[in-house]
Image (cartoon, rainbow, N blue to C red; front, side, top):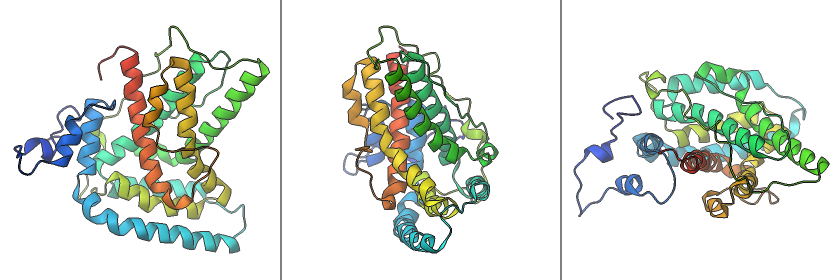
Length: 295
């Protein structure tokens, strides 16, 4: 990468000369436009995905992290059910991100809170009932210490509950909106160059998530961890809401976390969280396309 500004990011697979006898798979994924994803996000995402950390570190970290999830689950049998240390957890997560995670991964993580808030705000603005939202818009890693990971999960479940209670109370449902309100769909005011660039900031997004998942489990109650893991399966639920509002059922092909009524094992929570993040980015790009903006 030649620059840390998202507008000037040049990953190695773009800088290298194209060789038809040895085509770069990352270049093929970058040039493919079959799914919506903004130019800068695609560059940063593939820059992070093609890193040495993901290639060499992730294969060792993933099985160890899943083993830790099993061991911590056993440990939880002997720990009071309501024991948790959320503030300590978020301090550990923020510290780990600041000192060990790559700039690209940190940028994508902070973006995710903004994009998730914008998605719920879009549904609320275009629903036939009034629904309260609690947007999370961190501008720096330090902002995550305010229990933002936990609040992100709570916001999603609370939104689904409030929306459907309001729809039932008004005896109505989500229907196609002729002129949808896209005013909340904007690019978050986050710059790659503002992310930490220390000597040890090299861990990629997927490896970081696998490492942090058992830590998340350890410092939260079983109920909080289970809820966080299964919130990922609400991707399909949110996708269905948007498909109804915009009458675009084909958008659901981008949803990978299914089915909300069939909870999955927490062992694959890290991988599913990455899919959740990518689906959210694609949804944001899709919103911009629908709004007539260039992605």
